[in-house]
Length: 490
Ligand code: NAP
Image (cartoon, rainbow, N blue to C red; front, side, top):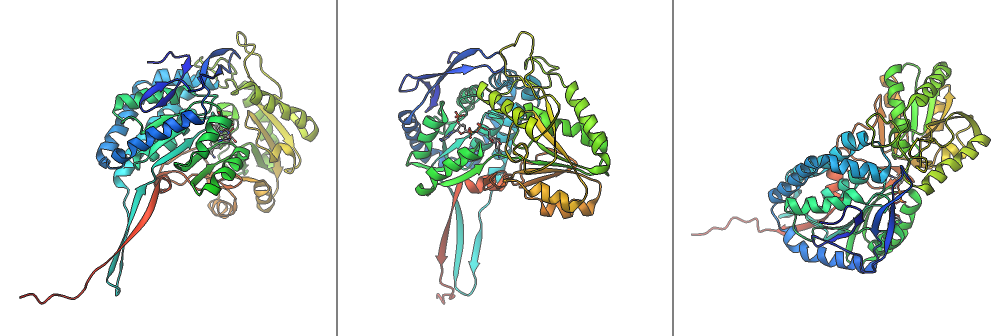
């Protein structure tokens, strides 16, 4: 058992100190105080994790699917049983409201394990008979060996398990790294895996900085695939390092998503959901709709209503049940988000927010007021760059053609939200919007069987359902020729 405030690596089923004995401060975003220390791992730690993974691979990859699924179901049950302690850790690490961690994010981690435990028992390979050539092709789907999963801080356990679960379900062994900003729940998952009976070495968790620990993972020659979720600039770097090594690579990157509102929408539902698409998790969700485009006839009313709703959100300590907005994740991120307020003064009009919030008892925490900015051009930096905080812009449009130009005039293409009751318009626009996911009259409804990922600078590849199972396996075609003449045996 490790002390709660010291985050160690989890290698071969054991919690171990980093070889270098170097540590990073773990800072609570709601108070700005150091609350513990995190292993600052390097290439030596990654090498140890890879060795453990390689040793475990032969046995794990031959473990019957039902047994793998059984262990994964147990992991899910244990996550459910430890929901409260995981939610508290998630909320303290990331500054997010505990209600969000408890009701949405940690339950989703359990769902990820259950989903892929079940999916692997249904995953089938293909066979093709080469009729007339007397041959049959059987396509095996084999695990890759040691694979890596690198995840960000915004939805820590949710995204960590979204990668780890399909990787181990398909028979791989994993070297995974959470963000150094939110290390605790990934660390707690190690103990859960031990308790569930996951063999040592199947999941190894390396803690530490991206530029050292993460980089060492990318560079390790025995890692066969990299599943990465994070920012677009980091993704570009990851691609540069990984591509010449010919590793499989999946990149889930940033977004600057349009939230498109037509006058014929269900206004109240749209407004309530738009508060979420704008400010949930302090706007730190890659799928947040940070560019709001509103059809002219309802633009003024919408602006007033959104500002009223934004101003009524309760900013407070993440541990309180009635807190709507907690702290953003770190001092550098706080500074980055606030730096856009100076830009906002030049590029638009701040309708509300635009400054830090002071939370009594948490004066050194990283709290920012929900911010709505009116802009007149989509070409401004506020509309082109991912701010990743509780900040949205609003802008009117007059026609579908104009709207489509605005929505697609951006370097990203992760998701879009569309509010209308017109079915023809829904189909016309959904087909033409550059985004991997289009939510119509909804937001963040996830069916885990569907493909998830982005166009343009939002990534390469898809996760979810069969896409994840295919990513973590290598297809191998076995062509078997046979003799087709009936033997005239006596
Ligand atoms: P980030 O800075 O790119 O970091 C992502 C992960 O990569 C972290 O674990 C980070 O470690 C690690 N890392 C950093 N440099 C690395 C390197 N040289 N080699 C290997 N790993 C490295 O992103 P973030 O700030 O954590 O997350 C926010 C971003 O993620 C936003 O852009 C958001 O849109 C995006 N996101 C995308 C999706 C999606 O599904 N498309 C989902 C969620 C978030 P450290 O944190 O320890 O440095």
